Image 1: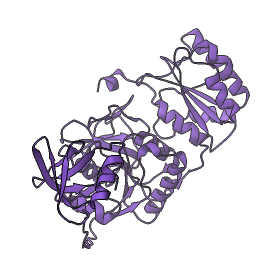
Image 2 (image 1 turned 90 degrees about the horizontal axis):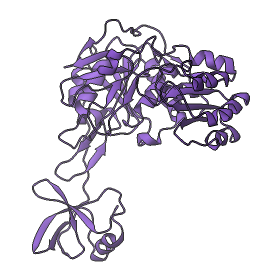
Image 3 (image 1 turned 120 degrees about the horizontal axis):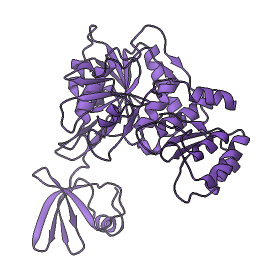
Length: 437
């Protein structure tokens, strides 16, 4: 159990276990219900009960009396075999899980939660998926997305390639939202895919009435059947459940901590929207790669030792020198405005370049593009050998440098690749229209 401190000692000394029915009396009020385990926490004085009403409550036991009403069994979910009828006319879509909260099975009687890792799990959580496709599922990781690493991107890319080469008509990747745009960018550079690869997640878990998991998953399977043969992110387009957007994997960013429409396309429009399973292109002038025959191409060589540094007033040279001295292979600076940093640190950036470490400049501004020719500081950065990140998102530029250094160590070739539009990460213009969307 996850109880600790005074609560754990009391439960163990009283012989009370998870699943038992107990009565807690405090301040002349009593609560009776099933004892549930709690989320891992440092809290030591609360117990969690499942009431007959179905609600879960936390009760402070500091000055409470507790009575064992009856012994019970630890809440668990019984999962009988699920019969899936094969239908030849429906395409095969693979769902690969990396963790996150996009799908789970909840037993509202006991409060037990079972994460969705297999095809059966996803279909139990969202049986409507069978209206769109035959579903195959596999767990690649079971991690919180903040624990994602560049080497995990490689494993995920290889797993996607295996699914496509084994006949998947499209692939959906269930992913935590916090770093989804890093992973979508990485997969965009690593995969030249003939079928859609769709990342999706949930801002709110499946046991909440306001969960966005259902619409996101349904829309993503529809997107996996479309002719948009790129790595994309498919998530809520609005705060309600009206439709979803399909965003290019290199031009999307999480913009809000909790809103359901947190993902937005930056410096471009979404590729399409998904409503009731139907795909509609948003901007007819926006080109995208279309579904085609042939094998998927895997380009998964990377160099993970790249630093990502934010410029700020008062930043010290040591912030740059540290990574040079530690043998880092590349540096991305998230500069201010058009691509600036304090002149004091330019000698350290020049030292990095002289040490054959490419330095790429991006902007803390979400919209717009880098132009280091406008002001004197920018021109000094150019003279120092700093590479412009153009209109790439800072996160995309960081991921692209990791990938680029896996292709070459030559500084000139690194600059050329960083300025080459590989996966739609660079726009010729950054329209004000897209800022207003």
